[in-house]
Image (cartoon, rainbow, N blue to C red; front, side, top):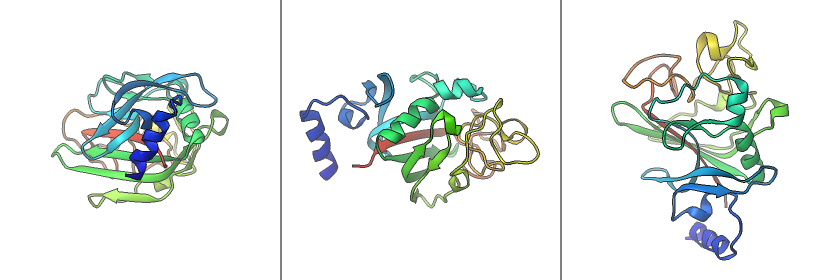
Amino acid sequence: MKVLGKIDELKNQNVKASSCLVYIYNPGKHMIYVPGHMPYNVLCFDGKHEGRGWLMIQRRAFGNEDFQRDWNTYRDGFGSFDGDFFLGLHKIHHITHAHRQQLFIYMETFDDKWFAASYDNFRVGSEESQFLLESLGAFRGFNKLEDKCRINEHMKFTTRDRDNDIWPKGNCAIQRRSGGWWYNACSLCNLNGVYFKVEANSERGVTWTGSEVLKKVHMLIRPLI
């Protein structure tokens, strides 16, 4: 395969990894080196539906982390690779500016149905831009999933203490939704909402559309090569 051949070429060059592609046969925690940032650990992941070589930037599956956090916490990242976590906007910015990235969002419902969304040019701006969602790219849905994140494209990031949305009635992260996100007015999808451990309906929950909450979310990125 062309992709696997390119990965083997990178491994043979013994280059410092700037993504999880070099670790495609060895998922888990690894150090990467991204221009403009000190080396840091990331979680490299492969899955039944997702495929190989992904870097996980967010996971919701355990309910062991509160995602209603402040600006600095979302900037720096929080949680644990052993549970739920958010990698951090500062790191995501540098990764998505080092190489063009594909974003793959894997989701499961409480009745064990899975869906996925893929975007081919995920790019997040710097803190100076309020971590603007600069680009999503072309969308592809799996299992008839519709593009519900397009409304968030070109929006600044909002947290409970930094209101960058355009909702005239207040802060989407507090009054209507929950958790930091690229809110518009407010959002159809919100993957950083409140995690429910049982099936529920809530606009404040982890949702892709409407109010049906999700049991599992993986937000994954991988360079396009």
